[in-house]
Length: 138
View 1: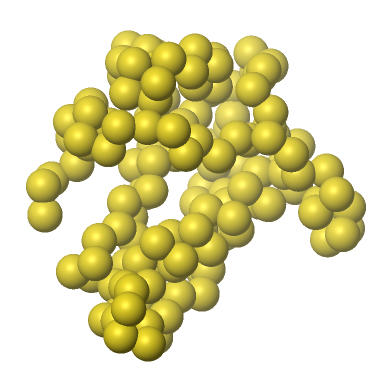
View 2: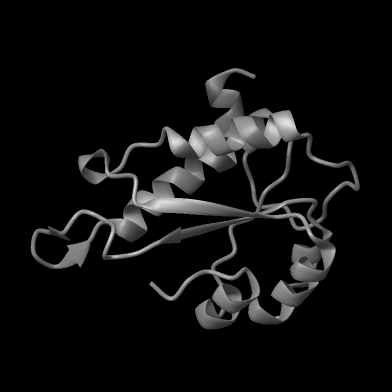
């Protein structure tokens, strides 16, 4: 797909086909996130891939009842922290949220290029999600 076509096709989708995402496609999507730029190229993130149906169903409650989440074949969760990111930008904020957002947008565009639907999830309860997907507290 041509780059600008990918940009035009990308939109938030909340209804998914039952087709499984191939491991090859998933690896290309994760690679797009891995090569994303970050402040000082620290790449202060890691991604957790959720394919287990029971885990996806538990995430519904942690994501404010958004049932469509469990219908996706794959859920990608991004983790980052102020401790791992580049210090303070202009003395007022850590770069971790910006860096992780850039990495996710790379993956979303890669998924679009693969013909897959995506949706940003901004409404979630961090502590619940971390417990469900077993993210360490640090």
